Amino acid sequence: MLPLFKRKTWIEEPLKDPHVIGFGSTKGGAGRTTMAIEIGSLIAFISEKRTAIIDWDVVNPRLTQRAYKSLPMRGQTLVKVITAKNFERALKNVSLHEVSLSQTSRVSVFPALSYEDIDNGTVDEYFNMMYEKPEEYIKRCKTLIKFLRNRYEYIINDYPAITWVALGHLTLSINMLRVTAGNLVIVVDSSPWSAELLSSKLILPKIQDLDIGALVVNMVKPSADAVNWAKSVFKPVCERIRASNFVILPFDPTFYDAGIGRLKDVISVSVSPVKSYSRSARYLYPLVDRFLKNENVPKCWYIGPQ
Ligand SMILES: Nc1ncnc2c1ncn2[C@@H]1O[C@H](COP(=O)(O)OP(=O)(O)O)[C@@H](O)[C@H]1O
Ligand SMILES: [Mg+2]
Image (tube, rainbow, N blue to C red):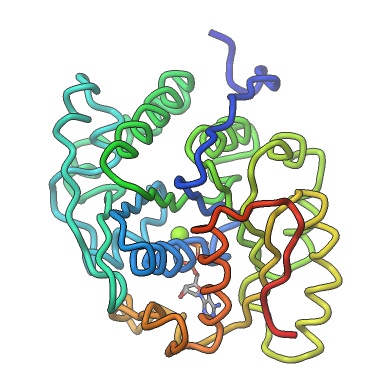
């Protein structure tokens, strides 16, 4: 088998399923987990359909920590299922717990890992599999989504950053997005480098043919100047990646989940389509509405402060 870095042309066929939404970004801390939780909870709330959220971020499993207040000690986890000796059987035994990540809706969470997986080496096996058997890894990711999609109407994927391990594995990271996200939401913070990287030759050709539901420019300073600056810098990026929606989300303290020494308790924006606790959350309603109605024409429809 050729080493991964030599197989530059390895590009998987994209998943075509708007009910499988993935949250990706080119760097950590951009707000993928926050968006996955808020948008996933809103989808479950408005659609009243069974919704599952998968935490793919084994290195920074914040979604799992938010759902379980910590990492679980043991039990069913993504790394365990993906690395299982008998994968088909492990899949059949998957049973996700419903958790309240918001005040109004319950979603089923697939935790990334447990303490047991760290102690007994399952996490190592997971990364070994990525490096040594990338095709098998991707095949399993694909099968997992297909399997869960038979049980859930909506699947929400919270990914690690695209460049998560090293640039040599960018191909693997992007292929993972390609086979597990039928609607890719790209979250960026408002640094110009995020824009450059996204529309650079490194990434653009590998995501251009995907259905990109939104470019979300997150944590923009809530001032007219900063919003206008973000609009002018990121609108061309949005057009280049052909995203359906262009969202500007100002920094909003109600979204901020870090407490001292632990993650803050559940915050919710899914209160009602007209009332929300958070200033920025109101921009998520029209986005979710468009997702649910399947209005995914690549037109960079603007949602955000005027
Ligand atoms: N719009 C926002 N306003 C304020 N804080 C935010 C916003 N979006 C995300 N955050 C906070 O920024 C931090 C990083 O967000 P997170 O969703 O964990 O990023 P990622 O999953 O991309 O690494 C978290 O503490 C989160 O609560
Ligand atoms: Mg995260």
